[in-house]
Amino acid sequence: MKTDRSDILTCLRNSADYVSGQQLCDRLGVSRTAVWKVISQLKEEGYRIESVPSRGYRLVESPAGMYSESEIASRLHTKWAGRRLLFFESTGSTNPDAKRFAEEGAPHGTTVVADRQTAGRGRRGRSWESPAGRSIYFTIVLRPAFAPDKASMVTLVMALSVAEAIHEVTGLETGIKWPNDIVVNGKKVVGILTEMSMTPEMNETQFLVAGVGVNVNQESTADFPEEIRQTATSLKIESGKEFDRAELLARILAGFEADYEIFEKELTLSALKERYEARLIGRNAAVRVLDPAGEYTGISRGITDTGELVVEKETGETVLVYAGEVSVRGLYGYV
Picture 1 (cartoon, rainbow, N blue to C red):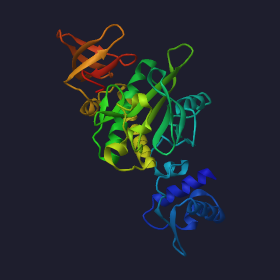
Picture 2 (cartoon, helix red, strand yellow):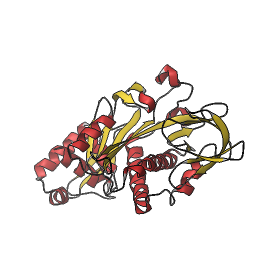
Picture 3 (tube, helix red, strand yellow):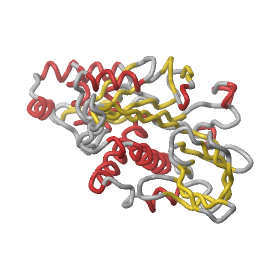
Picture 4 (cartoon, rainbow, N blue to C red):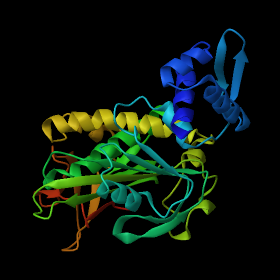
């Protein structure tokens, strides 16, 4: 019945007028009894649905804070991103889940969403537990036709899509701390982790998974682990407003689908570079590059068409910084 629930909710949400029971039956290939049962269930969950004889049903309002498979699916206007949606109220981490589904044959665009993570994982293996009801955690499966050396650019594509979607939904000014942290008012609101599986010959990409965590409705820095309270924030903390996570997730997926298709055409960031650099924090400012081979400072000059950060050293030499174990900071702190 899950598919019927999502489809019926989608039909109601996308209609400006009443939708008759017969229209729903014909469109979805289900009985009137099945439609009535789903409508009743939705009403019990808090959806305000008007039922008018001879006219049908009209969605008036969704329950505040509703975050479910049906709610998210009903908001999607994509061709492939999130069209197969796997929703978990709680899971260890969406990235391992998505990799497992990909290994089992999950198609391009399959998206794993969790309301709560108990073993989230970030850069250098850092882990944390994430409470329910506050954040967006999702991972999308990609099955690219390009070589493994192009995969790192997908992380920057996702960063751009997320930063723009957050700005569109919240009005907050978002910046990108190269390569893929999203920052609001100098603090991190989004982390992105992209992982790749290659063929045994190591010459083709089997699949990619791009995982995203967005701090949405945390009310104070006390909601974060102590070690990141100085650098983390949420959209609610910065705006004073609570946001609809399903709406924001749908906007992110729509933006990413469009940006990924642009990237796929040339397999460079050339067509996205101007938009990315417009949000790049520290561009034309001094940065410190924390390279295991030795730290150095310089001026950030933007990115290349393949996503490396261009840094002009104090000596006048221009170097390209590659994402990985190298970190870039502002001279006096996180940004």
